[in-house]
Image 1 (tube, rainbow, N blue to C red):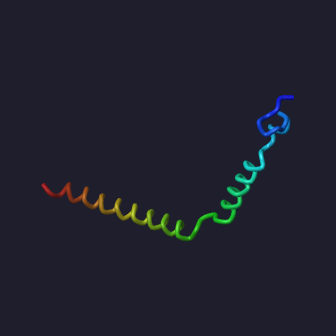
Image 2: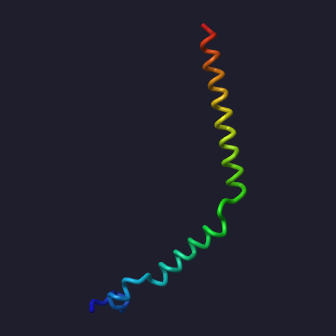
Length: 69
């Protein structure tokens, strides 16, 4: 059996190390606890409103350009 630097055999080396599994568990936990914070949802809605506002202004200027020589 080939041994890894930690002293475990290659069969044990194929499994997740305790550090890797705890990091993955922490990542999963944080995703589950905070799906979308309210400030992020509000910011997204504000961005959509601002995008619509800018499109409206741009189309108004384009129409104005057609009428101004």
